[in-house]
Amino acid sequence: MDSNPQSCENPEIKSTEEQTQNQTQVSQSPFATASLSLSSLPPTLPTQFFIQPKILSLFSAQSPSKVKVPTQASSLSHLSLSSTSPSPSKLSFKSTFANNPLQSPLSLGPRRPLDPSNGAAIRRASIVWFRNDLRVHDNECLNTANNESMSVLPVYCFDPRDYGKSSSGFDKTGPYRATFLIESVSDLRKNLQARGSDLVVRIGKPECVLVELAKAIGADAVYAHREVSHDEVKAEEKIESAMKEEGVEVKYFWGSTLFHVDDLPFKLEDMPSNYGGFRDKVNGLEIRKTIESLDQMKGMPSRGDVETGDIPSLTDLGLNTAATMAQDGRPSVSASMAGGENEALQRLKKFAAECKAQPYKGSKDGSQETIYGANFSCKISPWLAMGCLSPRFMFDELKKTANRTVSATSEKNDGGSDSPDTQMNWLMFELLWRDFFRFITKKYSSAKVGTAPATACTGALA
Image: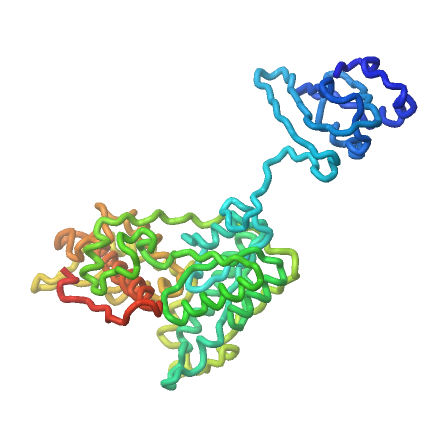
């Protein structure tokens, strides 16, 4: 269309010229000039197309101009914009409208995927269910939820079924372990708060708590790490069943072992039942890279006005606080082992420095002692069990302090009798054993698998 207003002559719209003049003027832009071409269209246009005159503000011209449009038209099929920017590059795109443009509004941005199972979809709100992964580093579950959601609600549930007495009369969770867990959850909350988020804590069955929270915030998905034992697998099945009824997707991840379950050179049901066979199968298998921790997290969902809740005490969990005190009233030795991710990282750093600084020690008969640390042990297993420390992160950190390449499948006595790397290979050897037990537990936690016992043959240590 020519910029001259006389080129469009129709007596039916002259009376409305003054009313539409201010709405159709286009301000000058220093970046580009756009022209609207309607020469190929019928002489009439629907008046409802100009109900929203602000659309024209998207277009610019070198000088103010007027646009006159007939008041009657049957349809507008194509709108073509061509840029006459002084820049060498030119932009050109087309949009197709329905007869009523209000039913098909103009959108210049990319369309968001509608399929909630699509990893690229932006979810309105998601729940991250923390279990034995009480950390922010190397946490694929947390990172994925943060990347795929507009808001994230981190949750930890103290399941009442994990406390009280077992059928044999023993505590399912003793006071020392419970204290360590409470400290780990408290430390996780602080780490999440430092990244702009928080941790919702509840005492209750996860299949009930998570459903209530999902309804409250309108969650689209629940993100969690898979576990391996029978009771934990049953809990996952209950969560999936409850969330399916609510139309909420459940996405599980794997992050508790050195080797990823998807990278194993065999199906889990075909896993060797003895350590020696397992070690031979994974020999030379590459370990996945550690996932960096988030510097900043998405905010908590505003809908539902969910309270974070208080972290329970031993009394709240039905445990006796006096059991954690020595007979003289002072805290026991176990009280020096504080739970939490920050404590785990500090201990790992200290242990790696000790391994590198201290000379190797062998016994008189030529046999080798185990890794260094307090009482010749790193004492790191409690933090690994709670997920305060990732085994992959531990492997990477120890490799940085090693004088040569350290392999997870190296012999426990590699490196020579005077090499500090021998002690690190000892630790990799122990981490591999830990992988074996977790994978074999996962294998037999399914009712579909037989009950053949897992064994460690004498040749497994060779």
